[in-house]
Length: 97
Length: 318
Image 1: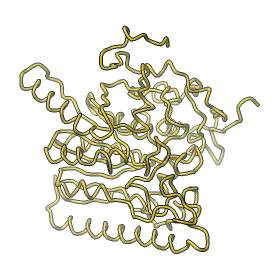
Image 2: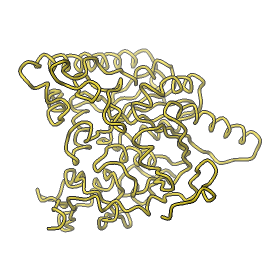
Image 3: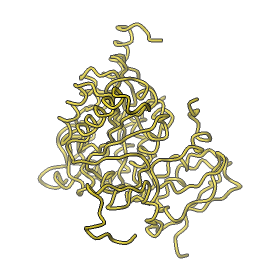
Image 4: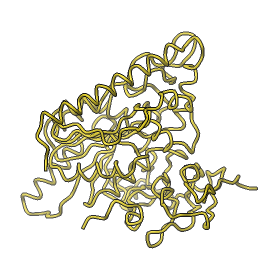
């Protein structure tokens, strides 16, 4: 986003564009990357509701791929994932490996 | 028709807090806000007290909110929203607006327990039709972990550092939920994001009630609690299971504990994973663990007694 000069700033610093934070990609903060293993996924959606960064895409009431643009790699999803038969559907992997 | 409170249906709704906000990795506050907003079946107007949530979700031109949102100062989120709500009522009376809109204030524990306390108390006393949500992470995390009146006993913070002079915070935390209940407002609740369904039910209940409502929600902070980045939800669950953070509601004076742990876990399970309580496990500080546990036991017993007492005082509603 281009920095605004004083003539362009809205009165009261009102932000007129809702959800403009989407232009700021926080994915670069990540040190660990969550990886979704679909065959172990029971679609409980816990990862979706608990994700602090809205980084789990959904489609028709089901979870889809991670949104790596915003995922900060905290690992809450992997910790909360119940998995299937003791096999986690989300595992954390070190970035850059 | 209200969206059923199951995750499959809820996930079809638009989340009104976007990614790209700059809360820390693994913060407990965004899930809380997300759940509150998802629970609402009405358009929401929110105010926000200064705090982590405010500074990180609206930085200059970047806002993570998809609802009308107003930040004024640290101490007056409740007062600001009172004004907005009053204007809404006036416009409605004049026939200039006909939508049913709900008003929610989001504030941290610093902006609620301490700095914003008088404006909150005033707004509740004046009876504004609003829901005040405090996300309680137990210290001024935004400015660098200074103690607040929500900081639990024994915690190490930068203004009560555990060392040779003091072993962390020596005072007990203030029971704000009870203080708000003492205002005699129609609905007060305590919730935890680990129990998402319970939390969202409480938000829905609150929004259906006219008048001032207050909710206190635990929001673990891995930076301040000195814990892992992935355990925010886990810790909020352990907080409920140890009765450190009992989840209950008080509707028209009738108290109901909404989830009772099958087996009350020892408080040390909540303290152990957090670095801010590390010093309490040293041999010379063992008395602190005892004091902390006794306080939890006392409050839990009292809560159960209050539940039994208020249940017989009032005839069952509905």
